[in-house]
Length: 203
Image 1 (cartoon, helix red, strand yellow):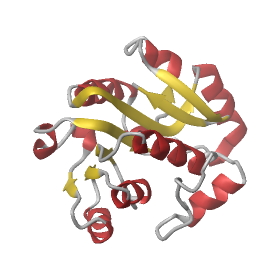
Image 2 (cartoon, rainbow, N blue to C red):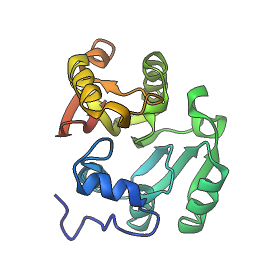
Image 3 (cartoon, rainbow, N blue to C red):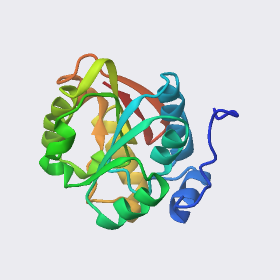
Image 4 (cartoon, rainbow, N blue to C red):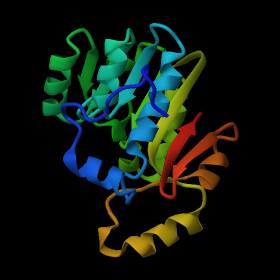
């Protein structure tokens, strides 16, 4: 998946628990490197892309895009995450805000080539996800894409099966995307399955 145009996800800020879960192919971070690598490659096909990263966290993906010529915009709930990300990306346009309330005002004033959300949209309820994705679609340039990498299941029965297998490890605070259900709202949605519990949604 990752070649010399890819990037080393074992860099500073790559959370240890994420790495262990990914390496062991266990819920919830199975496929994490593959997902970020695939999104990175998709974005890098467009030179100097303007990218909005929703819930960028430690900015693993955003930093690599920034270092390779992308113009980065971002929104995150955590002031500390913004501080850390700003050190890595001094010219990025980063804003604090709770995306369960939608985009902050400055980010609403622009359109983007790509809007990405990696392991962040599961903080929204199913209803909030639909409303938020609809809002994001209004801020895409012609030919632009929303790329969501996360714990995702093709059907509700697959989700329930994984939940049962995980037992106490299942995070009851997180609400995962179900492709079949989202397709009723977004018929053009496509899904690239990466592991038994993760993949990339493209809208």
